[in-house]
View (cartoon, rainbow, N blue to C red):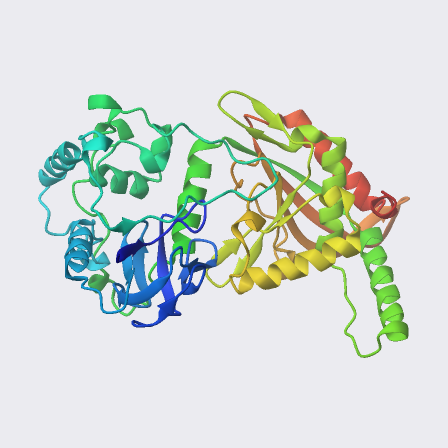
Length: 455
């Protein structure tokens, strides 16, 4: 019997995706776990594999199309089977799905009074109990995505308040996205706890405040990628809901730089002796900082923490999220148990993770459940900056470049190397004294770097 295949949830944060490439054509035989397509999600390009066997009778979306979760994408069945009824069902489902207006036309022709009316209309449609909305027959849903990580998961909200299941109309959901509001944190005042526009603590938008793109003249317009949408949403949420405060120190990194140079010289010599044709690994200042940060967190575990509505969680594991710039934005692969790994092991892992991040080949669990983040812009010549916290982590360290400047030693002015470090803290978790203690421990390790290697 033919079935409609829907877009599955390929990562825990996925809300929509771009069907980048089809790997099966209409008429092709499909086996269980065969690769049907590749889907670009908010963080990586994921594989969409078949859950049933049969023949791909119809592709319902083209390569390059934006696809919502649960949207019909294909029909799978027996060769020669009549799928006219399923085609009608799929087209009805696609027609009923909310469509985003083009950027030039967003709400341009809507009268101010129409927004509340649309909210009430959408709310009345969505107010039916979940049991009354019968799912069309013949649509096959894939199994629920399993969390394969061994590490502490992020807090799971009850189904009634989880953002994806919040009782709200499409209009209210879009308004919340535009305002950067997480519906999971909103208490609904409508019937059965439904969230209405007034619950967002902001007036319903009357009309777009953005000028039409056509009025901007000769400008390059870049549509938002799934990754950029997610970055915008998460960072807006972070700055709106997390009380940031910042601590700055300047560290003497002369000994650290000399240690790095000596380690790399030893690695080159070892490579020439054992593998003369192989390019030797080189460690970076950032690799040493990851190890030093992990050891400092071990000394001050209160910085290795996250805030929950009912408790502060202080992690025993030390998993460092490392910010990596990619063409569409930023990814944060995680170095697990960084305190237990050697600097060489960290350097090897960071390069492998960064390489796969730039080709969007990281698995979702490789970017989740970090306990502390490091963002380094020193290679771009930045002296210092303040980074935005990556929720639910409680802090992030921003690293500037190594600066060559004169310093005073024993009453004499001598050449020196300095580095600016800024710790962004969630004040709900990390107090000023705790953050200062962490930075003091970190600076002691940086300025006496042989301690990094002996632990």
